[in-house]
Image (cartoon, rainbow, N blue to C red; front, top):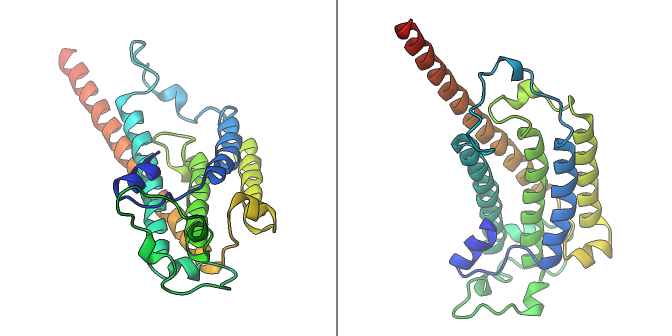
Length: 241
């Protein structure tokens, strides 16, 4: 939603086609979400203070974390899409650069008035490459987010990635399906994706590393906030006693 909102505000062509959105929902959302449902309990669950029974399922902290994570994935994907559309990078990421040119599609990405999509431009290698690299970034970020979401405040380096074997297999399945949809002829035509070269995978890897750093910083802030609150409670209890 945020991606399409960004595009609408800037009056740009949409970063994904309808079939891409459906494919992303199937491979990047369903399997990891199902595997989270069988995630083992967190290690420190019995050492936590009682939860307020009047509080909702989503607290202010968890809601903030969810919104920031979603914003990060949307902003990162949109930044990659813009870079691929407005620069020759949209051609560089392609595995097959036949029919490409440095200035392809750049003049028509910004629309004046009602943005009507031209079918010929929509199939150009440049815009196809931009959409494919954006799709790859968002898909892999969503798959990686499954591991980062196993705990709201515990580092992924403590929770690990092998404790939930179902998640590992589900993420691998989703990733293989993504590769098939990107590189298998005819199937990628149907999904309106194009094969990506190694520069695209460097960008995807960089986005994943940034996501991990961003997530770890948020979790660190939450842990410090929890410690601060716990110290205040202990101080109040000691004063009352």
